[in-house]
Length: 201
Image 1: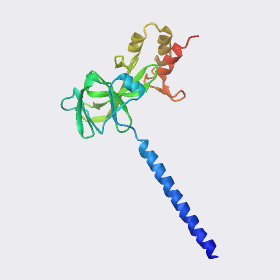
Image 2: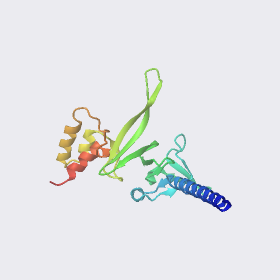
Image 3: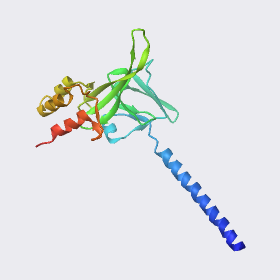
Image 4: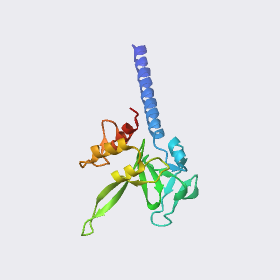
């Protein structure tokens, strides 16, 4: 009987050790899964997901807005925003620098075209700030100019893709916004129809 009781204690101890070990592994994985904050020196780095790590990123929106400062290993480094592609924040969101210095283009989708958003405040006639509103942009590639997401701009960037022109008119000519996300195909609808237009029949 005493032998049985002692075995029960050992079994309980083993179970407790296993539970603690599992918890340590789980939380270690959770920590390791956190996104790596840092900057992308080039668009090629972004494409290959090769990030230059940074403990802190200062975008200098109020002063020295042409530059981004990073701190890594206690050292401060300064880069001109024109000379690097962009950065990744602590939430894992990616941003691209392009011409404007007091805001950045958040990369929403990088497929046949790249789609971005900037959230801007709006104001009433009384000057009361409303919730941020999204303005959408696109580029043909990661190293192409960023343009407002409009049908006219899309047609001008893809001048010879007449099938794409027709699909744009058919899909968005009746008021559907170009920012519409196609949940069925897990991409922005405009990227989906671009993909369809590039398929050779």
